[in-house]
Length: 452
Image (cartoon, rainbow, N blue to C red):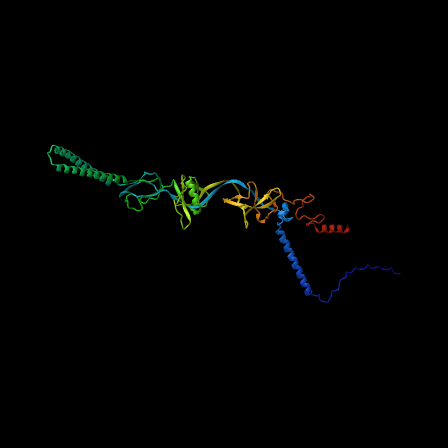
């Protein structure tokens, strides 16, 4: 009997028979239900995102140190301390440099320009010789006037001697009274002639002096307008040169009419008000001076009053007709509580600041009253004390009672609850294969897991 040969069974995969009937499409009710479920899911996602980005802080007053809604994340902010300082009240305006005196040097007599003794742009002193005119004609005129004076004086002396003789003869009754009176009148006439001759001589001497053109004031000479050899006269419109006084020098600027009264009172009391002239960019100070005077009327077109400040201008940094920025210090407020400008906020109820509760790391909204302000700080007249900390950065995300993280605080959540070692972001979980493991290692680990 032949041995029975056993054939191992062949495990064939069971393939499901494909249905020849087409799949049924979902009905209209199923499509409506699916759309509603999608809309509900989208609405829930939007509500959750809004709640995460808008924490509820309405319960901040009852929650206290919890900082608004329980579990709301703390906001990192910047803080500053309210300080007690002195605030100068500053008035800024645009001014024009105006010299105290500007003189156009003209010759007093007509003649030929003989010498020019100054240079363009030179600094001259009052009385310094600048030019000379040919003096010969004036010397001759002086000699003629002097001769006429001497002639008149001689005639006067002779008439006086004759008058004295006539009076002696009149006393002896040897001459008529009429001749004495006539001689007396001649003497008086000659005295008048001598006075005229002396005046003519003085005029001739003065014209001779005018042949020397001197500087009437101290200042800087402008460009020269005449050369040697030209005939000049007192009627020349351009003159010889222009002298402008530079030290001291004035700056004229406009003051708002609302502050004119305060300036007038300070000037009447003799209060010294410091004025600083700045360049066009306000980057550097050109010179420092004092308030000088205020005009007596308001300009109706601009509503301002002209004021004048005086500067020594020893460094000659101010130039006539130059535009400068004027900074006038009206007065100084001592012991004023000030905060940075960024700390003061404005709302419908008025001005307020966020005050930091350092022990609880929360903030409190506090209404304040503002006063004078400078470029970077503002005065708080009520509602805040010196030494308190206020929020300067990140206040847009805060509400009353919100929790904050101050500069220098250690960040929270750096370690786990059990104090374990913090894992590197992206590291695999315990027992999970590394992302970079090879394919055989993954198969080996999978087989070990199935055997276990």
